[in-house]
Every structure is written in structure tokens, then in C-alpha cells.
Length: 518
Image 1 (cartoon, rainbow, N blue to C red):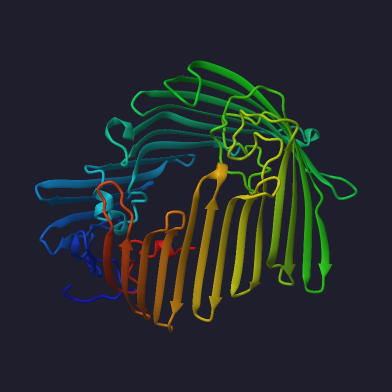
Image 2 (cartoon, rainbow, N blue to C red):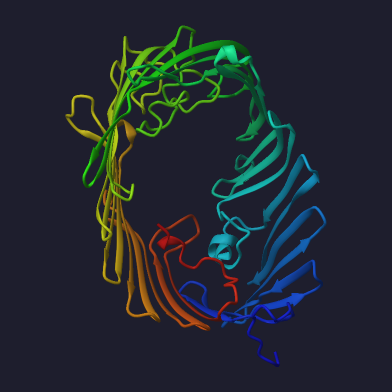
């Protein structure tokens, strides 16, 4: 302003107004944002983007960026005054390096009102905010001594805005990870890795936890037999040390343990050439033995699926090992066309143990003599339809504990995806259905629709409908969103968003279509 400039490679960066946009909400009313980009120098700039509501209230929102010789700074802050109440936020991210081998990052996040970010949807107006319910501030140093040695040390502060008073804060100081790969003589046919990690944590006001963990791990190279078998093995020796106070995770006072695990894995990869492509079949067997005592971690751990069933740390705890003896069996099948494109895949696996161990996680069924039967199926009918199915069935196939179905349909200019997730019995009690649909009316006009529904409670979380008009130099979009959920002092809301932008201006509001991402 007062002249209009359309950027191209010959136009230098300059100050001026960016595209304004309008948003209407039944809770906050209508507002308009008129951003102004100010080019301070070749290495720093800011975007001033006041949001003006029809009731004369205003949010002063500013982004500031500066590039130094060896670092980059991004800040984002705002101020709102309404009914004699003042709310604000300040986010900053500085990352760079001290030298060629040492990187650092400083992140600061602060708000004066716990619901400020959510009420005014600040996250949608800036790319620097990735969560409006959990604030994270930290200082991290990452140093690489050589290609085999690395150390990372961090000081962290978490603030959970959904909690009250001092229980919302969690302090972790220090938090470190040290990795060292040790070269061995080639006669060992493997590599030795040392990993050490630790932290000191204070949370929920008076809970203190300190942990130091040392892993000594040997991993062999693959051995190939004359009949096609591929075998590898590994040894893990873990030294585990803790000190805690008022903790429900660790034993009180000092605790020192040594754990050990041996893994032996064998695969038999097979291939069959066909006129229409290739078929691959691979039986897999893994023996696991840990003779050491283990802690009671029955209430922890993550869900077991085929992606982690052969993982050395399938219990989901870096400070523990899986006690006892077990054999894990799996079968992997894949069908490819002549273009080596995967059109069908099936993986299935099961874990067998010599006896029950109630101290192991019950969610993954590692505490039983047999785990759930887990697996996944992929099928691509053609370029128009894909199907993914991830499952976890009871070992006797009496019922299903987990089902996740994802289907993608594409017919002409209509693309729609459905995601269905169900958790039952030990894995939870939920049933969610999601749908995202995009319709390309023509080259310039398109529609998008998204919704999520809780089938257990017959409750729709939100609807979102968007219309977009786009040419080579102009883009206009209307978005309507209705949220039904209630969160603390937040209430259900309806909003209408209108944006016009001139291409290739960047959309400074951020990604308006996040829920439509596959």
C-alpha cells in the first residue's frame, strides 16, 4: 500500500500489507485481521497482525524473526484486553550452533490465562505454536564428538494448562542421552553400542524421580546359510539406577538393578516370479531369553501390534527388560505388480511363553503364555481404492481387542477417506469414526468436509466444511466449523472463516486444513 505489488523473482522483499482475512464465531463474534509485514533489514522482519472484533475488542499479535550468523530466532506474542481482564502469550524459539559439532535450541512458552490460546484460537494464526494445552520450555545442547559419539543434554519445563495450581508444572533437570558406537575387530562379526541416559524429574508438586540407565549392547551382522536362512543375534546388559520420593512408578529411596537379554532372530525370505508381478513370503522366528529379575510393570507399556512385536523393547520401557523366555512367530506376505508397486500385504504374529508373568504389561498381553494375534492387511484394488486394516484378536479368536480400518476412495474428482478405530477389553473402551472428503468441482473450485464421531457415546465432536476458489494468481476460501465438545470454561462454538490471498503470498494464518491431512 498504496501500491499493489505481486511478487515474482525480480521483486525485492519489502514492507506492506498482506492479505486480510475474516472470521466469525458465535462465542467471540466476528473479527477481521489485517497483517502488515515490516522488512526491518535483510536479516530481520516482523509481521504485525491485529485482530479486531466487532465489539471493539482487539488482539495485538506480532511475529518477529531474525537470522544471525549461526542461529535463527522466531518469536510470537499477543495481548488482549477484554472486560478489564488482560491476557497475553509469548513464545520464542532460538536455535543455532556454537561450532560445527555443537547445536543448541532455546524454547520459551508462556501464557497468562490457561484458556487464552484455545478461546481465541491463537494456534491457527501462527506456525510457531504446536499445542494450545501443553506448554514446553527447554534449553538443549547436542554435541557430536565424532561419527560414533554423541551427547544431548536438556533442561525442560512443562506446563499442563488443563491442570490447576502447582500440579500443572513438571521440571526435568537434567535430561541427558549419551551414545557411543565402538568399532570391533571384524572377527566378532558385529558391533558394540553403549547408551547412557538419565533424568531428574519433579512433578505433581512433591513427586521426585531420578534415573540413570546404562545399556551395553552387542548386535551381530546377518549370517546367511546355504539354504537361504538369514540369522542375527544380540546381547543386552542393562544397568538401572533410580532414586525416588512419593513415586508410584519406582520404589522408594535408592534402587540398583542389572538386567540381561539375549535375542536370536531367523528369517526365511522367499520369492516367486509371476507373469503379472512377484510374490514375497517370509516366515520369521525370534527367541528371547532374560534370566534376570524384573520389576512389576503390569500397568504400563503400550499396545502390541505387528510393527513392534519383534522390537527389542516391545514392552515400551527403556528402563526395563522383558523377563522370561519366549518365542515370537511371524509371517509376512507381499504381492507386487510389474512396476514393483505393492498391491497386497499381510503380516501376522503371535508370542508364546513358557509361563505367565503377572509383572509384565497386561495391555500387550505379554503377561500371558500367549499374546493376542496381531497383524495388518493392505490391499490396493486400483488407483481408486486402498484399504488398511490393523488388528489385535484374542489368542483363541473369541473376540477382537483392537480394530483400525482406514479406507481411501477416489472416483473421478471425489476423494474420501474413512478411519474407524475400536478398542475393547484390556485395550480400552472407545469407538471412533472419522471422515475427510474432498470434491474437485473443476480446476478452480473445490469443497472439503471433515468430521469425527464418538460411536460409543453417539457424540459428534465437530463438523468442518470448506469451499475454495483458486486461480494462478488468486485464492479465496470460506470455512465453516462447528465444535460440540466442552473443555473446562470452553463451550461449543460455531465459526466462519473467510480468506482472500494473492498467490504466491504465503498464508500467514498457518494451515487452515489441518484436519483434512491424511
